[in-house]
Image (spheres, rainbow, N blue to C red):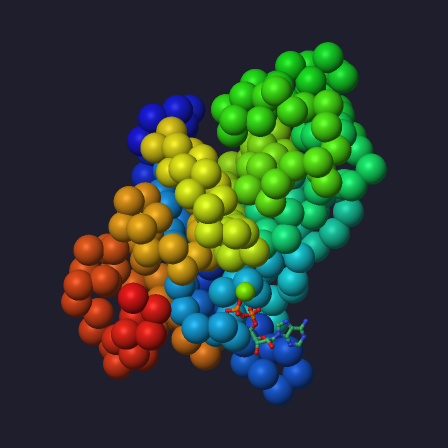
Length: 251
Ligand code: ADP
Ligand code: MG
């Protein structure tokens, strides 16, 4: 796709035979997943199937017990500066926006680039303003999070993640805490991002988004990837009983 400096389509995030347990609970079971540069992978599945754990493992917010995860050919670092650098390269947007309440919108977006990326304040602010414009919040940069709607706050959270120039963006149910009328404004930003060639892993039950933006849909259940297909195939012709049952409930 466009906007990527490197060759499109090469493997960017690779999970190889990944297993994770929470005590007795085998929450990720032999997960193999390759996300290519510029690709948008939508992950869907019932609650408790391991979708958030998968995202958190890619961002190294969770450790794994077996297998390997690589980003751009590099294994995930265990700790220290290398880990901080890795986190900076993986943008994450959660269901709860997690903005700093006592910082302005602009400060929320410039903090990481100044602290972690060592950008000058002026440079960070210029970039932040550009990104806030892009998500439609440019005129609210001096406000505080509580002065914005949920949809606006989530768009700031997206701008904040983008400000770190991540190689990949992870979205974990980014619209599920939003009032219905605010969902579209966030999804529109995400669709835009996908069109511009951002590599994305998106946990969502928004089927419209999946149909519009996904290159691939991954269906998870009980810690396993049960089905993996194009959105067209997945929605019109799911093969597993688990997927059929799940789609029957949400569509
Ligand atoms: P999903 O995002 O698909 O709803 P999660 O990845 O959040 O699923 O959780 C998968 C399973 O792991 C669930 O049964 C959940 O209760 C369990 N789980 C998640 N986090 C922890 C944790 N920190 N400790 C113990 N169990 C956990
Ligand atoms: Mg979850």
